[in-house]
Length: 466
Image (cartoon, rainbow, N blue to C red):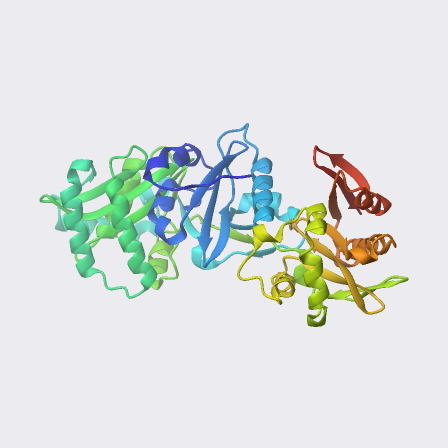
């Protein structure tokens, strides 16, 4: 099971070793973005299969970056499988943010019920490094004219790298920039605050920073890092009263730091009209698409719990009128021990008369599980539960019967009916089940309609495939 640690400055080197050679060319696959936005997305990380796995929170939902391999020996397959296993244990479906376009074809076929989004608002602007270093050609004539005007008006202004000893000048620049910052967007204000905090890391070898200075005063700053063949620009800020300052800064920063890079990523525009106009005028060679892959289970297609019928039994939704019998089944410690479940370890809230019915109802409402009531002549005698979906067409099936109805084959009959329905109507491709080794009755029931898969010291495991 994956173990996650918080992303912070203290463990920055662990992430940077992955990002420094990352080929994805998206700004989220950089240490600067992770540190800059850590209070917004609460990123944590783990390592598996020689890959970096980052888990974050977006709008209250757990999301994952696409795994970042360390080298050619790394296994993205192993890392994705670890994410899937983690999500299955947590009872959630994997959601991948920022899947690179070139990796979408690898991951999408894994999930038969996935939804894909590619929001234009968050696409990164990618430029050829040579274009921003030289501004050559007719289509960059506007930028060249602005730079020439700036050089003519402020001939003493010079670009230079920022060093830790510039901390006081940097703080003075931020104070001045705050006074001329007039955007009302809450996100823009957060970004400004986060950017200022990130510049306090200047001096770290991975963080590249430069400023245009005039008479001991910073007029503009840029901060970024190199990831693979791409210089990712995290911060571009300038005092707007100096005409031509922005294209001068863009070219100067690129010329100083991007000489060995193929591309420069100036990040997204965040739906800001001014930023979109400006970034477009620099003629990006491509837009860095960030695919959001939302996986789901076959239960999402199901509007209601169906009714199944066998020769003797009916399987349908658990009803409020089943409450007393259902509580007796759920509170039966002998049955629970053989089923491998102790409700006390999973209790959420007070154990009321409606507790177990409410859990079953909510599990289906959230499409986490499906509980069938097993009925004999309309009387509740047990349940079959379909649960632990893996978003790849598999789920686990369990069955339990009230003790007074044991020994009549009702469990096997209900289990087989639910298994056939799950595979041939719901659309699963694999069913799993297990039983304790001492539970001979369950072993016989499972063996009647499934094939043995493996065993360990505790369980026999079975599966059924189509």
